[in-house]
Image 1 (tube, rainbow, N blue to C red):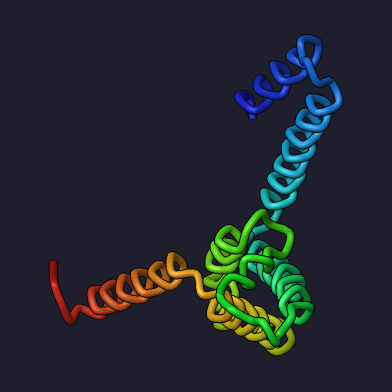
Image 2 (cartoon, rainbow, N blue to C red):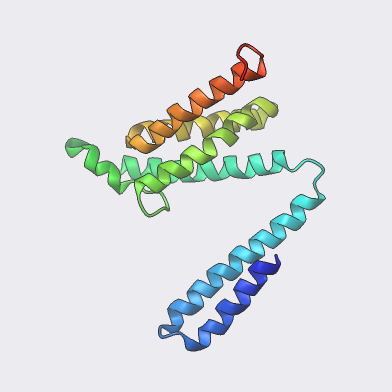
Amino acid sequence: FLFYTGYLIIAALSLFMAINTSEAVWEWLKIFVFFMFLLVSSLYLSTEPNPFPVITKAITVFSIIISVIGIYQFVRLDFYNLSRHFTYLITASFFNRNLYCQMLFLTFPFSVFGFFIFNKTWRIVCLIASQLALSQIIMLITRGVWLAFIVAALSAFILLLIYHKRISI
């Protein structure tokens, strides 16, 4: 927190020398809000005996929110002229579809993890989140994320074999 506090102070001091003051204030507020989020979440998670379920639930809810936004944007497309280039219009709240798919890819393991550790309601929520993320990744045809899925699956398979002592290193 010390380095981030220093960064926050230096950014505040640079406001006085900014050419575009409104943009500088906006940028400083983003830095400040992120710092407050980091501080509050660190304080909250430090009181939790096991923070992994809390983090998993938060990321799963985030995955559902961005998936629903992406599905809404997909439904609003013109289906008569649908092509691969129209998928660039689906960004959810991110800059482009690649960043959106990368975020879905990063939230996917948390949903799968939640499916295995939670019971009843949260298990269903995690299943829905993982299915929504996977369907969005498939529909958006981002080859980089597909490649990442293949590499992650192969790595997980190799680690599973090592864990069960079927192969040795």
